[in-house]
Image (cartoon, rainbow, N blue to C red; front, top):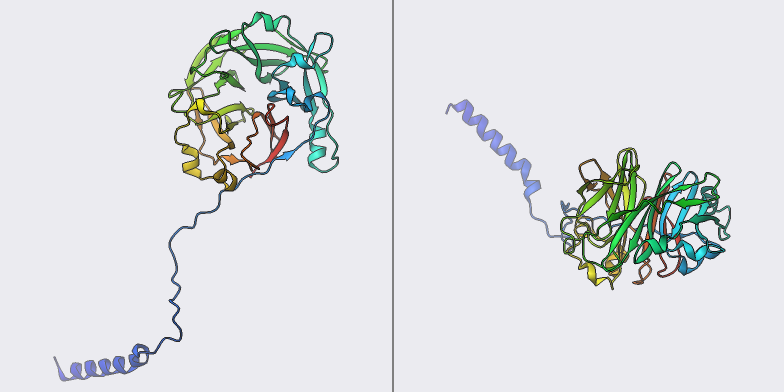
Length: 356
């Protein structure tokens, strides 16, 4: 190494050593608190739950014996289908009920706090209870124009279901069903009080969905597709395994998506729940973590080849206690959220659930 390079190296080393002495000198700590270091751990966000706003109803439909089993829209009227319409007729007739959307919105917007009056629609079903052996009432309803499609549950020995049509008068003066055209729908599992309890109209397809689709009771569930004109079965398509009951469905949107009620009460041991994949994937809200009851809405996607879950997080409802609300009816309410209705447990409830 040349003398000039040696001199430069010695000068640079001395400069760095002296300049760095201040930084490397030891000082006693000013306190015993460990320094806070930035964390790379991801903090899980709490799972949200949606409140249910109860919409009070007036008249016969408010009684628990109403046993509302399905909801659907007919134009701007919410149609409420009792499991046994014959309980609400006069002079041997039967009835279903209608509620104007304007009245529902008026209540939700705070324009009224009074119980809402419903329109009673005569329900004409000649000799239906005697024609269907083991008749156990209606389970679901959907409309295509003025034509109604309904499912019935029966138990003449083993469980069975039926699909039938009807026609509503535009002035709501009558809903008459065709008792001469019934298509039987065989159950997918040997479970009492279980049948195809949901129905959706998806374009030219009419689809019914079985209530129990858990892995332990129905390992290969399917949905039935019918011709809406003849009611003949066209085919079946795969439906996903989902634990607990699915009890009703909304209409299908332009992308083929729809929501279903997914419900469990602690005494429902016959459905033999397996691992709740949705709870594992998305977590449980505060009240779902506290109680065994499950009350949630799950989004599905319809195609001509299968029905699948969309992967959208379920909408979990706030639960007040472990006395489950037997939600049996659901519709969308514009872009606000959903309307839900219970069967008789714990009582007749019409509720609004906002979108998250």
